[in-house]
Image 1 (cartoon, rainbow, N blue to C red):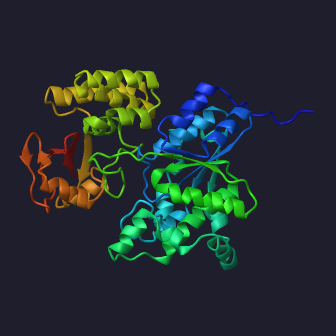
Image 2: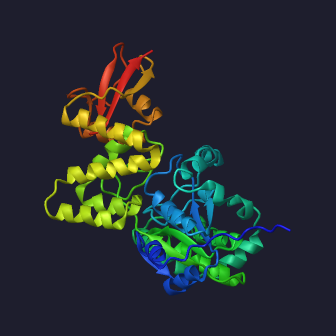
Image 3: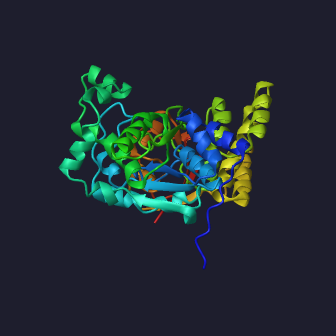
Length: 404
């Protein structure tokens, strides 16, 4: 008689230590989790992602990579895609109220989420849930029971909520519900460990309280630091300062090269799985006077290789060197077909050259959009004409605009 084979759990103290320390801000409860990992028992490791944008950016891969680390140790990873929580909106990292998203927007954003996530984790060995499975079925009694666990002061003592209240900004009752929903996800899938950014700490702890209320052992939690985007602020799709997993190799390489030099080591540590020893070498090289550009090129190549493969990474590196070292317009620049009379801002947002109209205006005001090589475009109402144009946007993006 054949039974189901038990998963092979890797109990390697060095690997366990790296999982619990690399890119980790806090572990609750650290000693307990270490014992669990050394016990040989398979744990259920949870990560939830809300599809508030159609793209997964590299900042979101930080917990995804940690999820993969646990997967490599043989543990069961559980990815929860927040098709329900995404409607409600988490304001953990926001300084103003996040509006409810229409259901059709969430559905559109969901289309390629799994395809993007599988660039990081092995989806064949991953348990996937959409949290509308259980959240959409809760009634008022059940929600009231969950809400009774927490007090209003618990919620309003959170730093960003307190600041909004002190500033006289509105805080909706809906926002109080989000930690309950994320916490109930942990109850629904019986998680042993939940991962999330430092901005998620309150929500992660709420999961522990709810699990206790439902007779489950409280999950351990592991938080990761947040990472800065292209403009130095926290990486956020709403700000357009992101490196997306579906960016082309050239765009991804160029975006990494535009990062501030002081972020090189942080990006190596959080967004790659290059050996720590090698990262320490690069850190020493930078401290001893090595040109940051040389190390940043290694970072850009490493990141492109992770998501597009070795060959694409090498080609992106060559394109970057040809373009920026020799001042050439790249041969493989993106070609955009547009109608005469179309506004340039509409063409650029439709084709994802910029994330939003506000980003287009910001670049325009900064003098960062020009007809190649250096004729600045100043008119926000610029339209497509009859002639083909080579346009440079920002420091690294080149497009060929070709009228129909």
